[in-house]
Image (cartoon, rainbow, N blue to C red; front, side, top):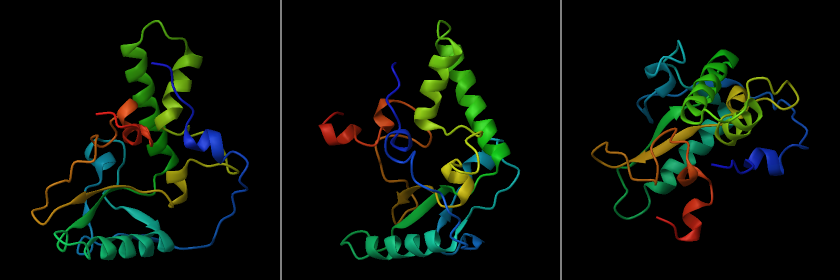
Length: 174
């Protein structure tokens, strides 16, 4: 598998990162369905999912708009991940690195790294270009119906393959 460039690599490298000063807040289980996957998988010590206040406000708006769609009145956003510590980011990066190395024994480190960063940001990107989840402004989510069942979105959580590429389904595949 040749790794395509990530959105971050193609379009956001030159964006000047500036802290907006928004406070981090923990999400409320009464408002959203929370399933802290990295706690469940052992990559994080915390089961709390936090995001910047503005991101939470946007999630509220999105959920309200979703519920205005006929048949989706009781649907909710299910949040798997928000803010991550650098240590959690490091564990996720390392786990995917080791998985690719195991599945592709002929790959050298540069090829593995190129494939890893398609889906997982390096924990060593630095203060000028931090991994998005380390800013509290990135969120991994899906939708659940009125019965709490996840709505099919094409891939499972953290399914790192071609089907998880942003534009995969736009091309009429699958």
